[in-house]
Amino acid sequence: MAMTTTTTSSPPFLFSFLSPKPFPPNPSLPLPQLQNRTPLSSTHRFFSAIPKAKRGVSGTHLCLASRAKAKPTPSSVEQESDDNFRKRVLQIALWVAEGVYILWLFLLPYAPGDPVWAISSDTLNSLVGLSLNFFLILPFMNFVGIRLIDAPVLHPMSEGLFNFVIGWTFMFAPLLFTDRNNDRYKGSLDVLWGLQMFLTNTFLIPYMAIRLNDADDESVTRKLSQFGSVMTNGAPIVGVIGGSACIVSLLWALFGRMDANFGGIADRWDYLVGYLGSERLAYAFIWDICLYIIFQPWLIGDNLQNVQENKVVVVKYLRYVPVIGLIAYLFCLDPKEV
Image (cartoon, rainbow, N blue to C red; front, side, top):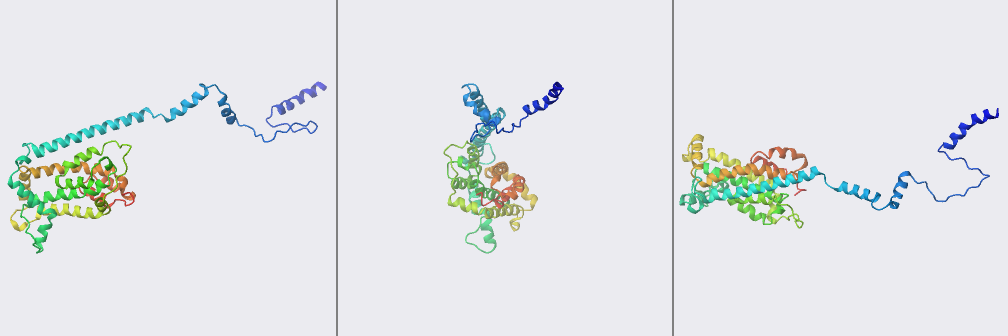
């Protein structure tokens, strides 16, 4: 019976010994009390043991782990390398385009019309007349009876083409002043845009190449000049003036000077085809229109952060529409981002 009692009472004793709960203290056996001691967790015990590990074993593993997190992944390095390569190729293409533009349109005799070094008096007279009829202000003044000076009478197609390109160029001013990469260009944006108004892409192509340069450590956000502030803060007004000039120019080309025997739309179209094939200035304007069709969505797309947040999607898609996309950008600029 004694053995049976011992056998049946053994398991509870063993389970209580293996149980994580501590034994109740026995008042007959006083134990020393440990003051201000808290039990260490397993994580705490592990990290507290790290300094005791030999240098080059545990410490090395931790150091390598931290470095592995900071090290860029091969895919990101490859992506950055591809982006830099494409940017350099694009820069080279732009500088080549600048050389071709100057040689073909200004110097070589193979394009329609006269090169700069052999320009005729008729071409000069036409250029002066078109400049006097800038934005068709003088013809409209004469029309309402204001005759400070008589407007030169030129073909409406030539006047319309000239003022259409100039009106589009005029609206590029706020876009250049708000370009996030304009700090790469170290010259004056005021002068750049002024020269663009006269010689269009002769100066815009180099700017498009220079703005692809990497930002240097000393580059800071460009401070707007007084003229730049006026053009930027008044961007909607610039859009109204430039957009109106472009629309009126198109209407003028088709319907202007109806009393001067320039014919109907079919006659004017025939004149335009012959004009483009015989006059260097008109031929150059076609080049400018094609390049603006490329540069407008490119610049606007790089500066969508300047657009009001609720209008970004609209501008993002309209930027591909010639003239209209630039008008949309100017009307939707966010004053807080400028």
